[in-house]
Amino acid sequence: MSNNEELVFKIKADFLKSLAHPIRLEIIEYLKKKEASVGAMVKELGVEQSGLSKHLAILRQAGILASRQEKVTVFYSVRDHDIFNVLRPIAEILRKKLSESAAVLEQLGRL
Image 1 (spheres, rainbow, N blue to C red):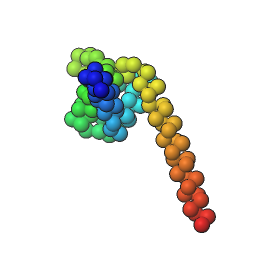
Image 2: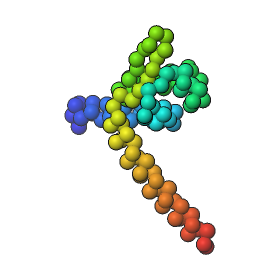
Image 3: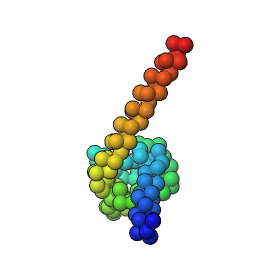
Image 4: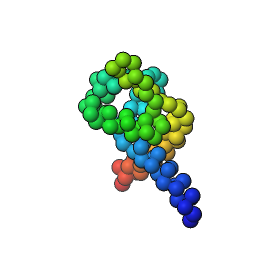
């Protein structure tokens, strides 16, 4: 494998790693249709501000979120809604997996 190929895989892995946290996924979903301030997200998501700020920084660094400052308030929004083209198939795969597991459990219940 060439260095360029390795670099591409690392970049992809780092991007996916930025999504690999339940709170980050919740933040992205929360910001799907609107921008929001850090304060609003703290209240709405029930996450401490210090933890939320860390997650927001990771998502912003990955290019998933954009931020803007208005006086002392920072607002976040989804930078590129194509992120949902990544998340939707994952949800579909999980739905299928859950459906298959339910069928197996149903079979076990009949034994």
